[in-house]
Amino acid sequence: MIQFVYEQDETISTLVARMIPGMKRGFGACKTIGVLDEHDRFLAGIVFHGWTPENGTIVVSGAAFNPRWMSRGVLARIGQYAFEECGCQMVLMQIPADNERLLRQLAVIGFSFVNVPRFFGHGRDGVIATLTDDDWQASRFNRKYASTKLEEAA
Image 1: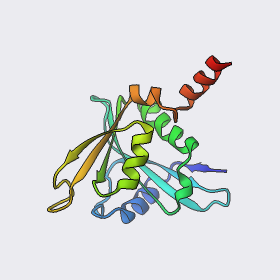
Image 2: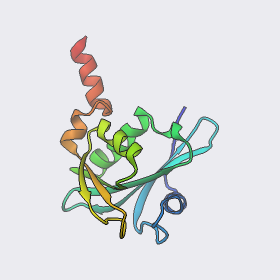
Image 3: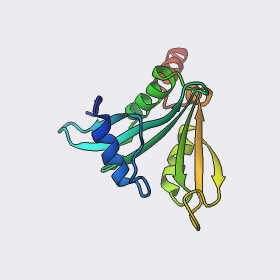
């Protein structure tokens, strides 16, 4: 059973920053969600930063110690925080272009991609991945959408 940890922003963001190359300076002002397994082992940390309420955008970064963190429930919680609690209309992620596994996963969720040459320095291209609230509402990973579809099918 996955558990969520809140109110540990400094600890979780520091842990995540250490796991992401080029993030030694940290995230600055942020909110986090920690993901624990049923034995209280830390699986992953999600960092919400760069929130611009005027534009309705927020940047999401994360790092995992274990691939078991990525479940429908965790994805739903991330979407709920960004779109419902923060009132955002778009989530952004910055990903190295060679991280094909993560890009495939984000494509399944419904993210769109913009390639950015040299985004991570000379010789390292990047991708800005975006997910709008409309795309999230239509995503099969959105619990509200999934429960609506089940009700319609009944």
